[in-house]
Length: 244
Ligand code: PEP
Image (cartoon, rainbow, N blue to C red; front, side, top):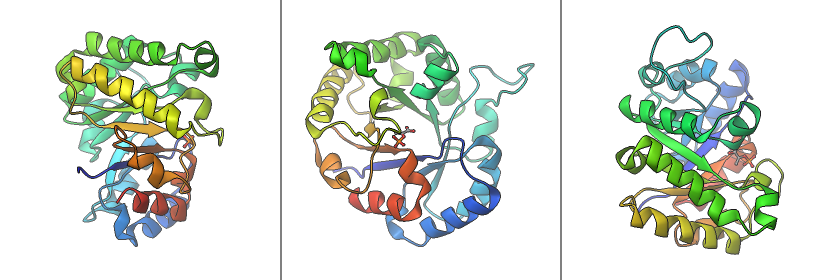
């Protein structure tokens, strides 16, 4: 069985001192080998230096859809790759909801990330209302289909997908094992039909150490994308242990 992937999304949290202490605690436990940390962009250089020589890996939380040029405030995929990022999160629901990103932006970001040698972590997920209306699977598959059609199947094959129900992100209410199993089953079936059956599928949304092993033991769950708990060394380490 392939190793499970654990990705920590620090969101807009951290400071030079907090990052130093968090990373130093993570490096003390072998369970974090292979895990990915995604600090805010300004700290990528600091965290790259802190994890140098270890098996902890670096990711970014966002990337410009454009190449280098007159795009004030953006950071290109080439720049992220130059700073050691192997992964980049794209299409996170916070970016879709708060920064107006649409499927076309997400697809373009996937394309530039892959072209720069990084693995995009493509987030998809339904709102509470969509789930209550019985549309969860259709919404998520439509987001993935858009990614496949706009970015191309080769780019999708080079990505990781994270199923993150919007109502579970940062709320403390994780999806049930049944919800996750059903959604991951539907996503894996679609990916296989599209010739992208080998890519890793993560679950994200209020993942905590409690229940992490049961979650990652589900068929079709290849790892987790962790927000809040990735800021607490003991919790992130415990989730990495559950992934072993
Ligand atoms: C996330 O930011 O992708 C996330 C899943 O956050 P949390 O674990 O805090 O719900």
